[in-house]
Image (tube, protein in one colour):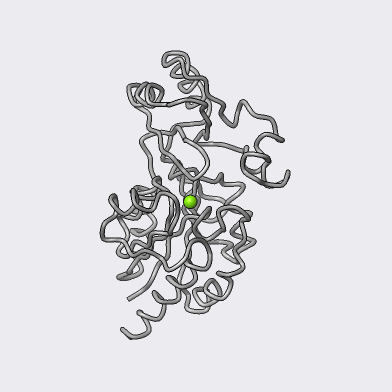
Length: 254
Ligand SMILES: [Mg+2]
């Protein structure tokens, strides 16, 4: 039985505040040595995710970007599942007016504001601004009316660790299904998924073994994915423990 790991980045494989991933270094190396693919599944852009793949030694793996807006199969083949960025910006503007709820999206922000809100250095913030399928935004008031207006226009919203996001009907689940199906063509595969945000709930429901990372929203996530295992620690420490246990379980089966 083959194994496959699909993982969120922020607050899951990366520390929510420092973006540190070193505590997961040994587990990443163990997955690589065992030939187990690690597919990143994130709200980050393609530019950012490819950068993180190089950093984490995951170059050439597929990745799911911008909350399932697209699956990048390596660096050349991009399977778009979402609504293009310009259209999302237009709808967000209309909904903000209708709901009388001012918003600030990435497209309204300069580089420095993105750096500050994301706690990112300039080069990483620049990659974060290269949106294609998803617009992150912040609000200063209860966004209920805005979120209703987004739905009314046939688009979706989700909430990550730092931002609300507007996007098409795509979510992380459909893209995760496509990744699982493609790896499944080579033979039976057991999939583990790891995530910490409420926008991870849908993809955690389509993997065989969902792992929920401790965070401020863990109770809500547990209600949405009741069959999930809760990782022993938040961020890369908990990620490493869950992945090493997954690899060890397969070893016992062999
Ligand atoms: Mg996260």
